[in-house]
Amino acid sequence: MIQGKILVIVVVALIVGFVAGFVLRPVILPTGQTVAIAPAPLPTEPRAAQYFAKHLDEARQIVAGCQAGSVRGSECANAEQAVTEAEGKDRFRRFMGK
Image (cartoon, rainbow, N blue to C red):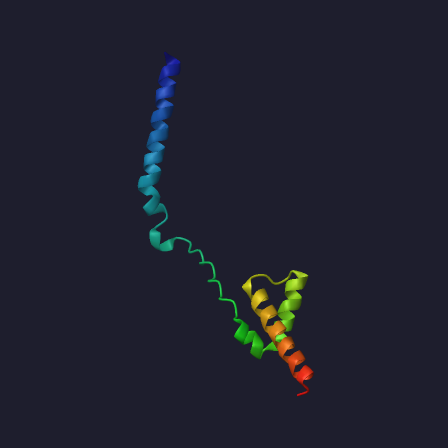
C-alpha cells in the first residue's frame, strides 16, 4: 500500500514539475533574450567559364587546386573548360602561323 502511494506521489510531482516548467519558461527566459544563432552563409554561385576565359591565370590555379583536391565543385569544370579552350585557340593560332 505504501509503495502505491509513493508511486502516485512521484508521478504527480513529475507532472507538476513539467507543467510548471512550461508555464514558467517565458518568465525565466523571455523570448526577446533568446540566443540568436547566425544563419549559414548562402552558397556563392560558381564562376562561369566566361569569367575564367578572361582570367586564365586564376583558372589555371583553380585547375591545379582541383587536381590537388583542395577545390571542388562546378568551378573545377568551368575553369578546366576555359583553360582547354584557351590552349586550343593558342595551338590553332600557332598552327596557322599567326
